[in-house]
Length: 387
Image (cartoon, rainbow, N blue to C red; front, side, top):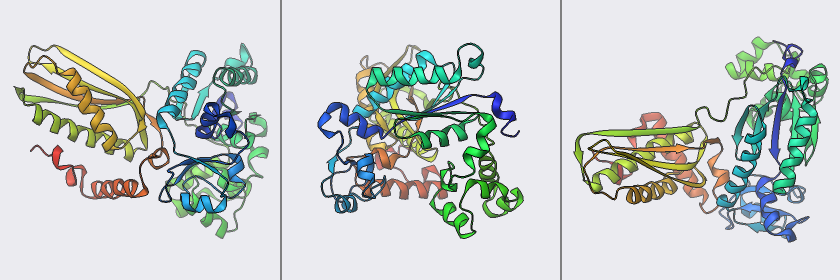
């Protein structure tokens, strides 16, 4: 399918501009117009998000905080508050859910909406403009959008519309829009791939689109084919309904009903480790934890709690234990216990942790590397080893 054939689709990409900074400015208006950095406040921390004013000094996400302070000594540095950001993320999600026919929450601050066919009744651009204004009016948060024929082009369009702007790219002008842009505008092209392409003299999307697809596959494998398609404005990826696969869970039925609380808590820890590892492997974050118990008489009870977005065991384990203690009040024999993480979104955990040092993040990376190589059970917390 080429870009013109794809013009039958209408896909919106919404992005909350410098989301964490924007939320902080709602709380403290004195931050407006100042260079603001969100992240770990110690020199060992990293930059999670920064204002456009800070970016003019060369500061960017994932930069060591010590370097960011050197680049801009006058910057206001704030330790992030994921609970506050999660609240506003859910607020925007609720507004979109009320109005959009089909939407996908791609991350805490990013959404795709499929409004194909709406032009026959209302007008796609008009509808999107009104949605944007409604979100801005009800949340106070700046918001940019791109409207085009597929997810890739609409996301790139949003990038060109920032800050706090709007851009429509109809099917007839997809290639003229894409071709002059730098290849690093294509989603999924990281620094390593960008430097490889530049070493070959490929600077623009237009040049990349002319490279034989067979050569791209030889250089980059299957990803090369996907990148080539994106460069040509082709992306058949559907907008996936937010209700689809937005939870991950596991449960255990005991061979014999039990009241061994210590054993059950050990099993819960093991469950959390398993699910959290799976989330990190798929780059997902959760904001809702639920614990389930089933008594020997088959009475089943569930309790859940909303939390700041995370995928780290040491945040999830205490919440899971707390829910279990609140839930297990009857002291009857238990037949089954389970854990579920829901409200999943795409996210890179390092950029959402403000109280944890890079040492903590690197520890998780090292553990996950061992699990990927030798199996999930190759490294576990001692308290979670029950057999």
